[in-house]
Image: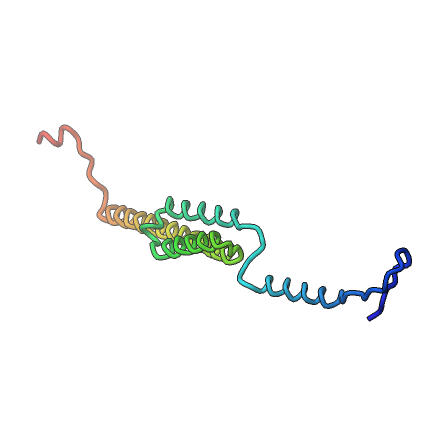
Length: 149
């Protein structure tokens, strides 16, 4: 270590403080904070909002009835995301909110697919019924005169 003399006041020379050690200590502290469970990022409010909107859309698409397990899983992930948000664990909150959003979209897609499948099945039954009627032959026309006889 070197000494620095102060030419203005004539005092004894002072020693230079070790700058390198404090820089290294600061880096170690920063790395420890970054790798810890604490997140210093901003809250994932947008991810939470999108997940909530997708859950609402899934409910409107009758996912409660047609894809209940997927919808329940999405709701659980959203609740876990809100808890992580309250604990200021923003990375975990964002991850869970994104999973909730995907699961809600899956529930919506499954519900819509089931609705489409049911509509197609109903249409197929109607077509089969019409086909059976047409194979029986034409229905004789009824006239009021024929009804009197």
